Length: 321
Image 1 (tube, rainbow, N blue to C red):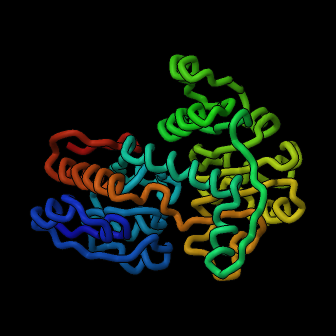
Image 2 (cartoon, rainbow, N blue to C red):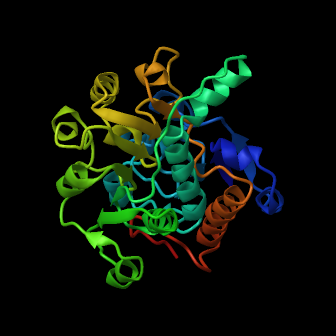
């Protein structure tokens, strides 16, 4: 078996996943992802499986990978970089790892929020440079947090928000009424309602035709003046130019994001120098606790699929036994 391994956090973080992979006797080819389509096309065709991160696995890549490619095992839960309809057509199972990083990402979300509301990034950098910059921040207690996507991560964000004394509203097509009642979460039927009513908006939805460009000039205009937007989902949910404009005009009070529309970004990416904007390099799920969980889940998915036995978490409904 020849496996292409591209996810950097899998490779860089110690844990039992390394020993388990080595024990399989596979030939492992390591690359530093996420890889663009051009590099995937160069590599495709000589592998039985991809153990991937956010690499561009397009229809063209899949066509060039056949007939040898049998399995795609995604490290993580985001599938928007994989052409899922094509994988179904070609009967290639796409495995993924739900339930492994919700705690870590929720903590990171609150790190971004506290960093923005208390000006921690700006003032800490100033102090390091010898400047005693004493900016005035904001409390988050009693502010309204609007969560778009009340899945595993959104729920963990809600639990933490409740501990901070925030009011919580949320929208999700698969509403968990018992959880919402337990944490006194107000249900909203549409994303538009969340955008209008929230002091802080936290994005925890999948990237889809409905959510691509959700945060843009027209929807920003409906938000409260000075609203804060948090994005630990996908960069493409936010229109970069419109967010930059809103930050400069102070219509948006702050943008905290772990994801961008281009990763890694060019040095002149406009969000890197925008006011009241905190950007982290897609590390929301990258902790010493979370990475081994994700790595082991993606690896055991792959092992079980190869063996035709055991538990498999399949995202596209294609199971080969």
